[in-house]
Length: 615
Image (cartoon, rainbow, N blue to C red; front, side, top):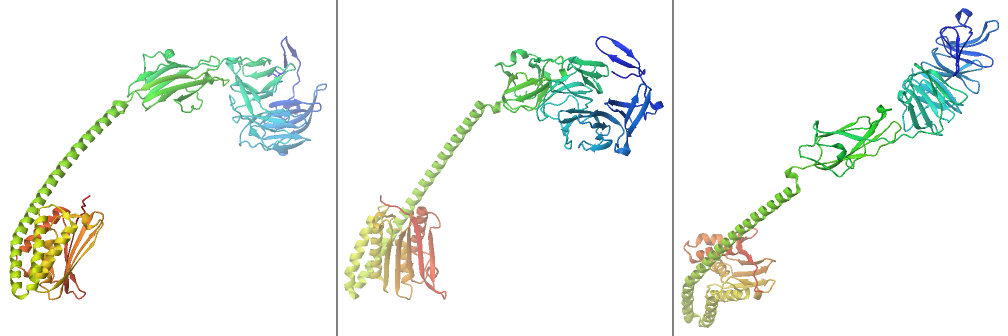
């Protein structure tokens, strides 16, 4: 039964429409307001929720057309918002109400109690529904909220894997199968709930599903004794008859509708032949900006189709309603673009794939890179071979030069020896002659030592290297001859600490004799002290070290006093050059030995040559 603006009642059924008499209850009869939102009648009283004057509790006696106002509940009683939008009576007798500003409360024993919902201020509550031990609230813009009806202090928003078609809830009702129905400006949603009031599934009914009214009217919903649901909408009344069988919708199918490169369609492409096949679209290196368009046809719910995509083995994108996907700056190589769709029932299609290959530029091709690498290796090896040959040639030339220089120095040394020998022989012979009259006992020893020295000098001068022991032996004979010839006595010592032994070490002949001769002639014999000469040989891992120490006049003072044309100066110069050719520059060190008071104690000559053995 519905009220009419023509002041009579209309009864609607499937057979006929019957007119009956009506009774008008308005302000003329003492009713607080002519604007009434909803009316609830129980056994004792009638409750009317007005638009701006609160809730009226009254009795009406149709026999004598009399009105008795029991009580009007307003702001004085705790109803702070008079714009009542919904009013229901619970099974426990409490009369619940909800307002435009989001206030919720109930009336029990003529007392108003306000309930905190936790909703934001000014969120209108349009519907109240009790089901089992739960109270449900339909709001404007915030969806559906629920709480325990016996202690409604913790309201929560109804949520789940699927969302409502609209958050503006005008109607709430449960069917006999336990499903919650919600009416909105977009039609109605059938909501399957879990035991914990979580959304499991949602079935939406709109114009394409036979719900022609689309926008429902506030709280204009009911259920008849047969379990049919009646929904009031702005364009009429819709009846829903429950069915035991569930219609299973076919899974959607998705198709490619176009492929673009830099917003230009690839005309030669026949999409059906390229989808989910082994065919691969070949692209040039500059075709790295692609766009794909795709579509699923759903006549009934075209706006509820969603898509997701992925490139290669990446994660799927979120579900969106956009049916295009663009890529820029794609990497060179093989790619697979996949797309999948789902319908309003969240049924997913089989994914479809499109394969394409972007050719890499020449400089990134493997064969080109290997060729460049091989060429670089060949050039590097060629340059290395040429450089090594150049170094070897340079070394050979340097070796030849050093050999030649050493040979010339050796010849010069030998020439000096030849010059020295007559002079030395002459001096020895004069000494022997003088000994004949004064020291006949020394004459025999001098002649014997001199003869041995001459023989050794002649033998060694023909060789490039002799043993260190042979050099030491020749030095001893030379020093002994000098001792016999000297005007003042002097002592000498030769210390050998070498590894290997002196017999196994090779040394150029006559390399040390000029330094020994210089130490005796220009050091010891010119000094005033008793002469001492010390010759030492030691070895390191790579060199033979030699030192000649005397306690004579000092080399710098001796050089300043001796004539520049002295034979020994030339011999020393050639010997130095010979040392440099053998061991390199700065290998010879000559220094004076000084006392603490600064006076000269003698001279030390030290040098080293590469260690050479006979094995």
